[in-house]
Length: 312
Image 1 (cartoon, rainbow, N blue to C red):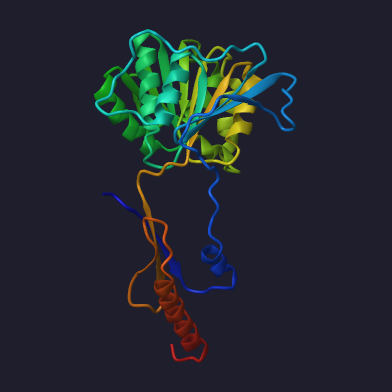
Image 2: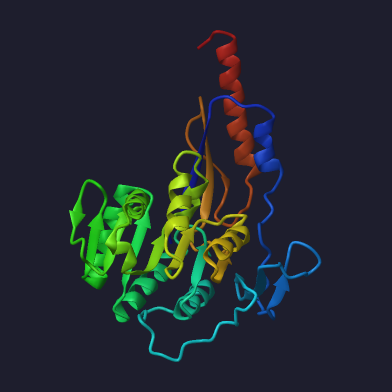
């Protein structure tokens, strides 16, 4: 199978370095396998917020939360034919997110890289096209926009691209663009925005960027309230807070579907300065290799001592 590798190149180090390996990271969420009944949450002792409420349930290996107005009714599963079918079985978080879309409600999907978040975006696009609606897909960089345009054009045909450098089929039902282009359209009061039913924000965690984050914030705020939103993100600690913010400013439910599942295992390597190669320190099962770690540190220490003595 595919294994992602993390390589740490070490040239100089302090005692803080050892904390990375001495203190095992605690998982953000502990996910039981059995489904639990939804429960209302709040910031203190179970009291419902004044303007919205938050519900939470655990479904297999994912957590589903929803910030919604007090008058909101629970999700009703659609009885209509699905907008898109797949040749593989969807994971729990994908099924939950699709149910949110079918209920015409906004959703934030937070999952690790390669977990399958794009499936949710594809379903939102398929659903919009099935209902003769228009949809915008935004990404943070032009290269990703170009990639998604090619993928969606093969899948859905009626797809356009707008990146500032290139404009292709701007009257298409599905438009792929950078987030800056979307904000520019909102500033201009573009007619295209009035025709949109869904907007998909890929890599929404870019909103934390000090310089570019305001682009996402302004775009979300300026979008008309009737538009439903799909947010795709890497795992983030404050997903629920984000959903509460969306619920507050848009006066509509916003779901959070969160999973810690990592289909592509990681391997951690150290490449010490002065060493003779890579040292595997954490394998794909999360097991720490103390022997290799100490070898890497020894190489680094010897290199540092040699430099200090003027031998190199």
